[in-house]
Image (cartoon, rainbow over all chains, first blue to last red; front, side):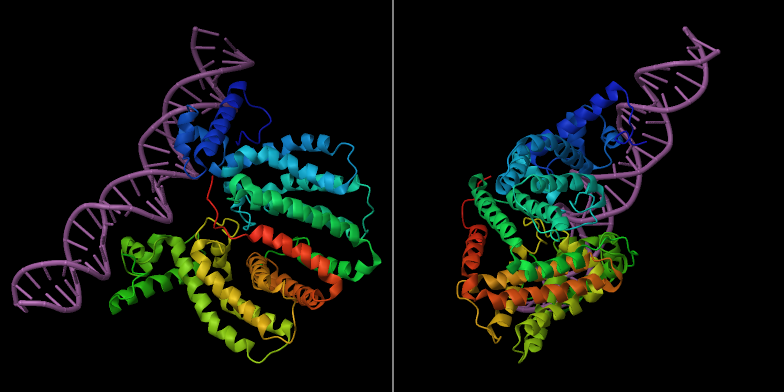
Length: 234
Length: 234
DNA sequence: CTCTGTTCTTGAACACGTTCAAAACGTGAA
DNA sequence: TTCACGTTTTGAACGTGTTCAAGAACAGAG
């Protein structure tokens, strides 16, 4: 059985699993994902190759485990960071900053996670079934960021905003991971400017003048995001 | 030497190369990219494995060759399709339709190309150095589509539009490749609606009322797309 | 034709992610 | 202690994309 899924497991087993994961992440950070082989990881953790596969379904699953931990761990931090802030821009910034801070030291190997972003069939894609839980938790942060702010948003837009903001944030992270500028200054500038635009647009969105724009945008969103409960033909 | 790069080459060599490529594409279409091994391809083309690698750098290079051919082949078709059309929406639609028609029968294995879209370091990514030529030719189509239309667009926006439209079209194709709805009706709806929005926005864009919006959007674009001639630190 | 250098072809071998049958270990019952 | 049984650990082996040293086929010069 997959120990990752079991509730039980001996203390020793937990230690072994932890050792494998942490050695893997260390190696990923040091040399990158591709330059690290499963044999390297097993050697570093003092186990046979098979053991690594006993605890983790695949090499990707190690990255996935990191992603899951990251999501859980940043969750509390975000709750705290949101705190009593009321300004929307500040609240969004808070969510985003926590993520960047956590991911910072792992930026290089995070590419291993995001390179599959465009393929929703890939387990590691942020759009995949396997990452659904993480994705929903992440979207929830934006839900909260919106709810707690001193700004009334149009009803019709409301259900779509968390998804859109999450997507926006995903784009920022993607940009950051592949940002080769020293210290990733380009990402910094992008975050600043784009956050201004996003919050600016949200502030304007409830103006009656924007109603037709909103209508058409929502139509588009609904055409795109129709729940995929349909038949899976082809 | 890489025969793909050489100008010369015997007739027989060209035939072998062609046979390998076409057998590969047939197999990709039939069983998909992942289910097709290089050994399968070599067997189907009646050559040894090594021969496949003599003509193509890698398995990905086979997809790349298809992509390159597609770009060249659709080029003329697009020129013709643009013809004397003057309406912007019709012109954009023409460019996009040619692409979809050409890619249609290969939709399934096109995922092999686009799944690396998010990784600009991957040779197959539409953002990679290796696909630059194709990308630039593709962007040029949108340049033409804009130039030939009966619509004056704001000067400041002008240099960015081909890139933006190309990006938009790339998004459509990506959506289409992973669209599981029967007959990809969702994509159809998306194209219809989004083309309306895009052209609508372009028509409005020159209104003086839109000037501040344009300014801020352009600032953002420039922050993002700064030529990556800088140092490659990290 | 013969010789020579280039082009093309071959398939064994490599490294990798992954699988799996077998062994070792741990634990609680008798 | 001994036994049985589930858990953990092992490493040989598989299939994959890819490399490479060696040879075959060919083209042109003499």
